[in-house]
Length: 187
Length: 122
Image (cartoon, each protein chain N blue to C red):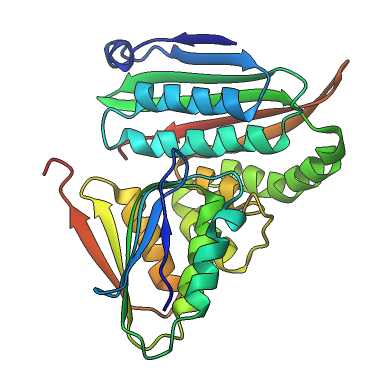
């Protein structure tokens, strides 16, 4: 497991430059991901505002636990910086998808892709009401034993600078999922 | 009303029914991989509550994942039929997201919610 980290104080001093706070590359076993989560909590949650980012981290890491192929290494990177005294975080992950779940992930991207594009192409004041969408999905949306069937994506979108980006990348070793979200704190 | 006590773990909350005070308390963090399995005993317990039983549900969670959020909704919906139920939703003063999460449930279920602001420095 590769884990590069820097204390958050470094982020606060780094002004507008992004710093890599953590870079994880290992098998996405529950044990490894639990260690990563614990590590990131100690790194990130120094102020109440940073809880928002940590909540996003929880969702992203649990997505890895659900969908990543446990026999292939997964990559998870957390970047941070401070802008106008507020921390900002970028979360990136890349993982091989469990062979049986590729179709499910693809259909899921197909479902949320248009929403993502709509949000990206709409002025914020006339944009999507993420809170209302979240409530609707919480109340009416489907579920799986381990997840909220899309609720996680919407909850990430709700607190993100822009909606989470997901793409399946087909490589030599099979399909990989690239996931990216930028979290807005203190706003 | 049967007893209910589930000890906290690194990923799951402590859940206790204080029978004498008629209080159900959920505290800590709720980020289990399989929330349905975790919350099943709580939902089963909720099934046995008489409609006229006065119950206060105190939610004092620090974090919960989306899988848990669905289960919390199930719990509130199961308790909706109780005539004398109140949910007390605790949130740290600066934790706007946790306040909003409680407001979302308040919007969805027909159970009275009381929001309790906590000073994290206290």
